[in-house]
Image (cartoon, rainbow, N blue to C red):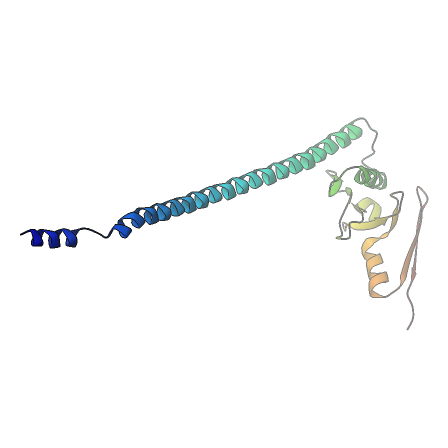
Length: 197
């Protein structure tokens, strides 16, 4: 009976080296697995926090830029409205209005400044072309005899120098030269030189 007990005892018990090594191996796997899981979770949290912080920062910058841009436009509208109300600007003199708006374009970062009357006359200055140059334009049946928009390039003082579209056609398409001599209050002379070939 004692030999059966010994065989039964040996069959149900594990070897000593396995009993000693197995708990350490299980602890190592548990520690490595838990560390890996916690590292992954903390890494994901750090990435999410960084992404949220960047989104807030970009959003705040956009809000700040839009506020600044829209406040500038609102202030310009108030300034120009007050100048018209105080008779400092003559709304009938579209050339003066265009010149005044050109000077404002030098000071403020806006795309376009314009005035339109109830009679359909229009004067403006702005960045009409992609190259960033500031042009002056007007629509006036009274001055021009038509309802077309007349778009002018401006010289360094903001005076109308040449018709912008005409200059583009003459110089870029025909390799010519468009010269404009303008004296405020006296008139404007255009000279078009196109090579014959």
